[in-house]
Image 1 (cartoon, one colour):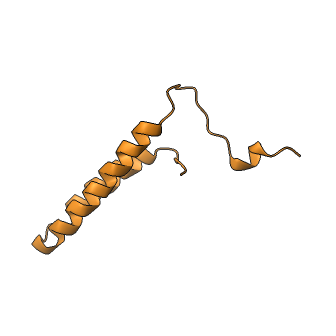
Image 2 (cartoon, rainbow, N blue to C red):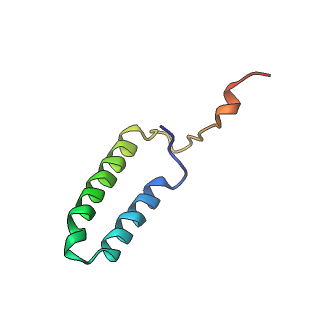
Image 3 (tube, one colour):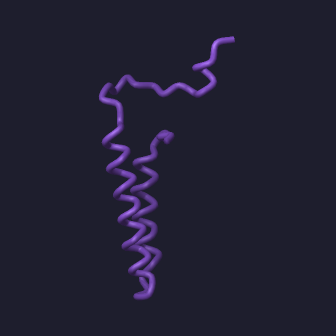
Length: 66
C-alpha cells in the first residue's frame, strides 16, 4: 500500500464530513460502517508509520538504476 502525504489528516476530515452530512436515520448504519473502515485505515497507517521523523518516502522510479 501507499501512504500519501497528510493521509491521516484527510481520513479524519473525511470522517467528520460524513457525520456532518448524514443526519438522516437511514444513513446512520452506513456512516457507522464508514467510520469503522476509516478507523481501521488509521490504525493500519499508525502501525506501519516509520519511527524516524526524518523518513522521506521515495518515488518508485528512484529504486531503478539507469
